[in-house]
Image 1 (cartoon, rainbow over the protein chains, first blue to last red):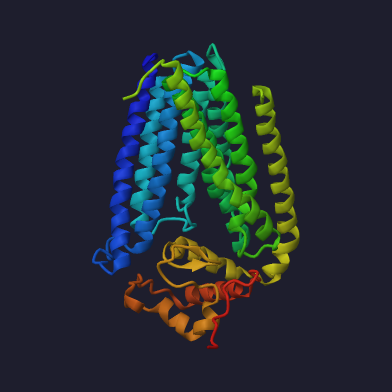
Image 2 (cartoon, rainbow over the protein chains, first blue to last red):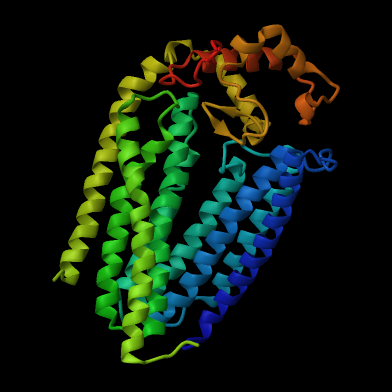
Length: 287
Length: 141
């Protein structure tokens, strides 16, 4: 660890792993309910288990992304995090909001929109929390010595992820509109900006592990995230086939979502190719 | 060979172009298709109250509408056509839990008014033009 403040990342990963374990527990509750063993129905009705299970997934991934950013940005920008204490406060409040949401799900307190079940008042707390996180990252980057492509792609992904949370907070009376914009959050996260974040993390790891020239890795990073967005943005259409909008989306969504795996394939090929390239220059040998 | 700046142009250009297309198509759908296909003129206050009940009880956590939800309990897009209003109302107002086909449902015990709101919501949902979803059952053979 080059910078002391990178230590914060450890606790974000610890939180992630804890939430993952809890997610698996709720997954089993649902799995058994599907098999007909739903003795826990009184305490964990299916809709509760499901909301907890899917929301935990979202939170542990976000917590992982945040931890990764707190680790990568100081190292890439060559600057300590501007405020470590605030980062810990952000971690604790994130966990607290999560706990309140999950407890609420057991008492019929939620918004009941697939994947975005968090009730509205807690939404605002999430927004404040994420703004704090982004503020720390952006300030660290701004005051840092360097602004590398890797750090910029990662930051861009984080900023877009935050912005895309907002369409999910608009209130619509029309179920079709509601569904339409819900997918702007869910789809454009999972098949869009999250891949930007993952691409940035992958590039950082490859630069560190393989010893391949940063310029080469970052060039291919652009290609990968380019493929992601070109396929993923219009791929949103695959959620619009039967929700009450026109049939244009059947064609657009069909074609572009069929291209989406290319970005993932590209990412895998990229990692393998860079690793092989690194082996030739024998900077670091992995067992 | 591809240079880094070319790669950056590919990324930024591709993003801007596809996002612009997404915005354009969305604008078109939301201003032309949605009002017509969803019969927005029928979106009464009662339907909106029903939608709120649907959400505040996380019905989507077990059921689906428009094919979206949890796939644990039945699809409800055409539930009024399929089951009829009295049946649906009985289920919604029942204070005793039940388990059709072995899948337990929480006994919500809605009031008469709330049940009517939900039924209005289901009726409105059932009339939305969903490009052929759900398919009619094939009863030949």
